[in-house]
Length: 478
Image (cartoon, rainbow, N blue to C red; front, side):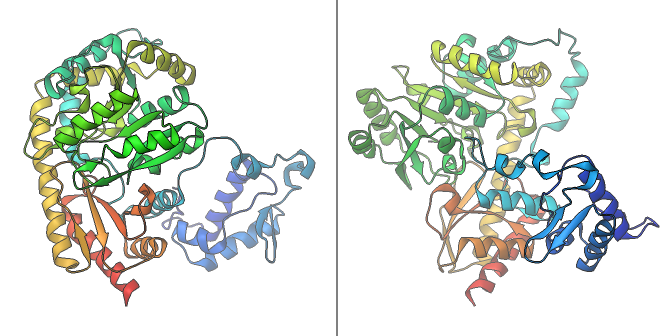
């Protein structure tokens, strides 16, 4: 985000005025559009409000903006020869369309992180840079010259990558499949988007875990789906609930994350796995299994996905590199019946003509390389270390104020607050103290839950981050 240069000889207010004038001339703020308030702009730019007042005064003197009491500061409708009847109502367009924006809490967290890069981040569901195989990938890129044709690739994805994923799934996940039943995507969220848009119709009912990461994705509501809850306890979802949901609402599909579930970190018990598959088969219901965390089991145990037990082809299996290597590669995969893969590959081709072939080539090399397994072992050890640092900090800073179960894999800590607090006020107090986290209500829970992610934060920041959260909580309950 642009900030004024404090080393420049030009006064800060003039720099701000010039920057705003440039953005207005580029059409970022069209004629008639509302500018940020003086207070908000001052916070974003890290200057005093009086500096922004001077900048606005400069722009007003040139007729570029106009201010009215009670209605804020707007770009002049008559500057640059524009007239009201020729100016699109961009605000109305931003509020239109069928694809909903992110939930307000997530947008607030994103804004806070962009405004304060030193914020301790317990919200972002990704790995920190030191947990990614940066050196290994750099060596692979140095050793392999990717000189193949850089045109549009196969709509299902780069064939050598699909072959590498098939071998990986057989070796590490116990899933036997071929490259013809694999679709390469830009991550798990694109897989879910394709499923909700192409395999379901507006008005269809689906079953989603409660709480669930899926509740934080407006794509389900954007697709016009009706969401019904499958409660999660310490052993995962209760499969018998599916029968009643099917009877009452004729659910069309089940979405589940059985291994170290996001956000609760629970592992679906073996007896429930068998029961879930039995009931889904009996009712003819497809299951979408999102499996990002299995390989993060801290003891290195083989956590079988549901797909490895699937004898009837009932499961669409989703995985990605994001939680085991690097989210920036944007490589995910879906295993499904070939007819489904063809349908979704056709839809994805209409969206983007396929993924960039270069990261697919890198991912294929990494999966086949001698670097992959040592990286997984190092990742597990480092995540276990971060988890233990968070447990120690929670026990030290919040005795009697918080309850949590200790996850055996994944990157999240799901916590129940003992005192009753308002989610919005708690998040704002945390931001004020320099720490962000995700309120549990984002995932469908009632107020009073918090998800801390320890995969993104640096190890040295975990203790101070929990201290800042504890101070924010205590300030609210005084």
